Image (tube, rainbow, N blue to C red; front, side, top):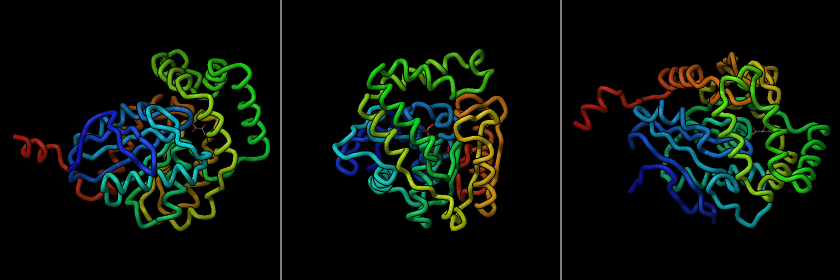
Length: 286
Ligand code: MLT
């Protein structure tokens, strides 16, 4: 039997995973995968906007939010296995995946392994390339700095790169929510995930095999996974849609949620079969 609500718990791949699962059971399902080092609450605006018509699921990647970390070393491969186990445990057939940054790496890894398992893909502020040697070195330095100077300092440094210039005055609440998500992540999970990110394989050569509909969104001022990276994926994925988001840096779903949700809803209604129409839904509950 399906349980709906927020902060639900499920044992997946040997560890307790925290997730939200809302919206009508028979509607197409979309699974939201957060970036690093955040948690499922970064998708609250999107869940609210979609849950009347779609089954919406957001979960905490292992070691983040309220999900356990487990005993293994982290890797994007391991995160994508966790996702596949979660899909199975929730009995979802052909979900749509929506991943931001690290969430996009996980989604691309999963769709690369099982292209037939997904009915659509939304890639936000992400990329298909592996880390360059310079980026790897920066991650190793970040691990050192977290261990020496603590998580607060790491959060302050990260935030400088995450947002568009104007967001620093217009999105203060979102920035403090993101700061909280970072400082609440354990030092071990931060270090393990930084290492996992540095070791991840590129997925660019697999993009041409994606046959599901794909929407790519990226903040115009994204410094971490810039518009050029999104354009490269757009060129490689046949039929994909690309939207460059105004007023956004790396966290376009939080910095410009109205445009993000508009694009998402349009994509879902154009490409995803049989959404539950609001009118129909109301009839069902009356
Ligand atoms: C993220 O937002 O998930 C990270 O910026 C990804 C990365 O550092 O490559």
